Length: 269
Image (tube, rainbow, N blue to C red; front, side, top):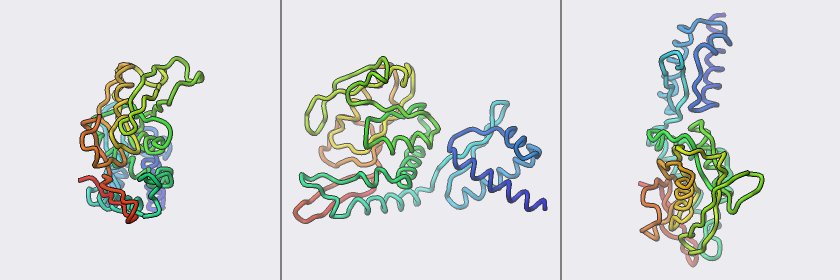
């Protein structure tokens, strides 16, 4: 019977922990919920941690002290990340994704929960040491990726608007130059959404010249926030010099050949 109860407890603990990445659970709340000693729970956590790490599914971090507890960190082995990005690149390489004008159809992948959860966890793995406390993106296609990144970090997502909306209240707006089309556009963010002093991670789905990412960085600076990193799902090889110098991309788009119906896209090295 005791073995059965422990197995049940392990399943529930693993489910709750992995459902909320980076959320700090106190052992006290688990002890109350299961009616067992904290020492017993510590043994349970060790078993879950060992299993997660052995399967390459992440790890548990234990924080000591009165305000401490345990949290799940979605850190994957580099081999897993590379294989996953290879599959993602393959999905983007289908010839039927080519849109007249040399564009790439991405919406089905960008709105796939499974793929964006993985991509968000990969960004967590790469940017966790920078300790951001807000994710910033611009509407609309980058929202799922940014939301899943925010989930992995367990921090709020802030969405910059193209233009401003009265329902957002007082807002900060800037004009920015799109890097590829060289058009001046406007983006804004609510003053309530992004506080002064925030540590911001900018996330976007696609970067060509980097105009949108540059605009998001400037917008964050305008409200007194600090951008600690920039992550994009896909960046193009050309132009080589972008408006953002320091960024991390998961995939690199080398070429779209409309005539031969070929797309050359690969994981970033």
